Image 1 (tube, rainbow, N blue to C red):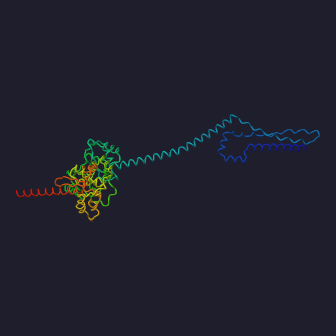
Image 2: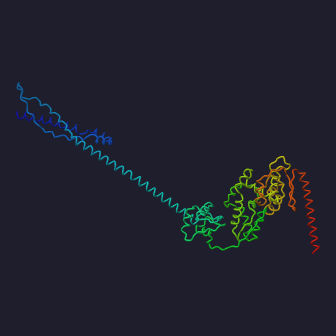
Image 3: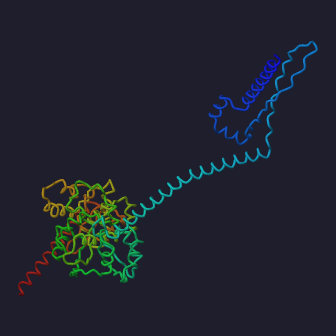
Length: 493
């Protein structure tokens, strides 16, 4: 019986010790709620790990039996229940070990961060470098292709252009001139190409015809006269003042330079890149005779051509000469008088056809200015010039495929007011300057003696009629004298 009681007491003590151990383990191990909270906030957990030391493992609990208390004086055989054992104290964490663990955790975290940064920064760098190399390769390829096309004249215009090479011109000057004329696209590339040539480049002064579709080698050969071309016979052609385009075309064909029809086509087509072409009216009058659209822009002068020359080259030489005569000073005067280039040339062509010398040209131009500007004149706006009537009837009419009386009437200043829609001949520089001078006068009429080349001016129509009668009498007397001389010369034979 005593043995059974002792066993019961021992079992109670052991049960109490087991319960105390379970309670201690429950306090040390995290609950499921805490585990879920840590899973939701991983970053915070990492920080807590670096700040707090890990919980030490609990020490093993040794089961010890306490002595059974002695029975009380009343003789109670059952002793008092043993008090529950005290909770085992938490083991103390070593301070140095905690610091070392904390430092190790920080080092590992920093090491992982550096690895991540390195891995993240390498990929953008590689991509940027790849894109840069690819872009540079494309740019270099485009530059090389562009220079190659320019060097060999691939895909460029085939229009021939005339350039004037001055004395003692070097490669740098030539390359810049070719660039300004639109022949080449890169002066530096042309200079580099010229340096690799074995022969020195000595550029011959004078006129040369080149085109953008020529290769650098061909251009240099042309400018240095190294190309083996057939030498053609030179021809000097003189265009007099007041000549018409039809007369100039016939003269060129007679001299064997080019066909008259080809010259008329290319001269009226224009588009040779001269400065004065930019000042031409884009929308010309519908009454302007198309076959002589560029009448007035053939500057009278002596030109050197060759036999069987390309008509484009002939036209370019004439255009170039006119462009040189139209200086900046003349353009400023023209603009100050509110004249367009077409109006200036048309005005000058009438003055050229009416007056024989510069002095008379100034006075004739003043008469036309007065008629155009003064509204109180007897013939407001009516120029009434005989050369305009002659041009309409004897130049335009015969060359019309289908007669258009509106065009004929527009050129005849006896039938229409103001300037005609186009020039009636090709004026010289004196006639152009006479219009630009705009000499002041009070005269509205003039008449010239075709035999004596003397011009008479009048303010009123009555004066003009008197002088007209006088001039006719002088011309009749002159004709009579000439007839008498011819008769005497025939009798003496």
